[in-house]
Length: 189
Image (cartoon, rainbow, N blue to C red; front, side):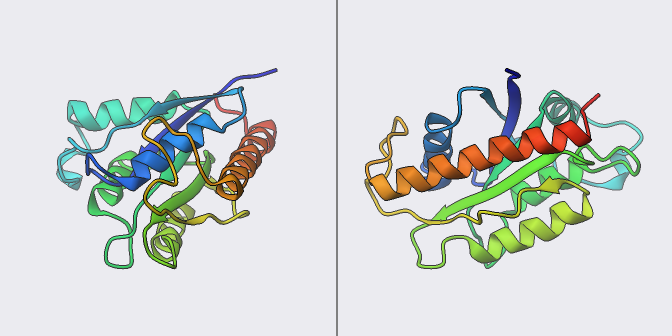
């Protein structure tokens, strides 16, 4: 059985992010052949094409972390009906310079949590549009718009609601199967 290295992005920079809590739960319910490494985005400078000829250390490390990943998972909040600026900035760095797009053919999935009724539906649609342009191989189903109530996930990632736990477990199994299918057709070098 192969082990797949999954780089994951938490779209929020908040130390109390419910999406960070969600990422902990997703890792806890994942199939054992997925290994996770967070790809940090908080210390990246703002992207500018002026850097394309000589990337700073932080963006180079970002691209190296993605290159070391078999797949990527985005766990994002919704800010003003879209994705957080820090996440978009990271994607901009990773997809440049032209011809060196780190997301090209990379298996990817999107999920997010919110205390509101629509979860992160609009942010996810925005993120999916960006990832489509970046030619990532997105898992399109199941969609996962998580309404996260206080106490639904403990600090150590234990999901206290059984129906949510089953949904997240199924989501991560489907992600694992998606990664395998994509990499069978488009192996990473």
